[in-house]
Image (cartoon, rainbow, N blue to C red; front, side, top):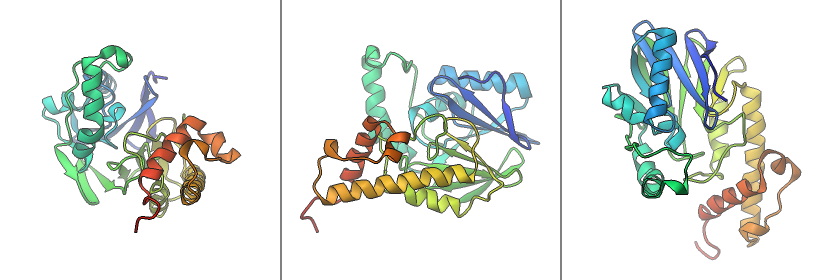
Length: 281
């Protein structure tokens, strides 16, 4: 779904959900300009963000923040960089690009029919110009934002964004609402529960949380997904210890209610890769 307008989720804070993939784009309006959160799938889609901001708000875009490195959140970066707009993001986005996004991008650019929905012909990978390696408070457009690099979870490059004067969080794909959280392309299913537990220590019940895909949620929603991630991590650890093959793992009804079995198998591949081999010290 593509929203026809920006939805206000807090004082001067907006979300817009764009097709394809129901990607959340955030906007934080300050007295000196706007900060855009995530840049979508390619330069044309990034241009749509620019046009939509200009049409509805008529304010300059003074900064961009990436929630993580995946293509649907960062492949529009180059358009903003060419406009001289600083891009903030986790300091490991550049490394993730090289390990995961670049090989896929090159393959699709050489053979567009391999993923005809991507429209990546014009994409040039553009990592953040302001890499964030530790929690930082920044003034962007006259608004204070807290940028919190997270431990490996959805990726090694996840960044939480908190707007204190509005009580709003942008969490990227650490949380998803309109579909199940995704694995693959550098995910850490065994570390994901720790990330959510650390975030819950910072999130108050009255805070509004914007997922990478879907509508705004609350702290209770995160707690619910945490329970499923904890169960999944324990399932994978137990199966690995018993030398159960990835395609033979049995999942509970609760896990299958959130994730299709093919998603769980992808999580198992990633999870097993992050556990020591049997007999290793």
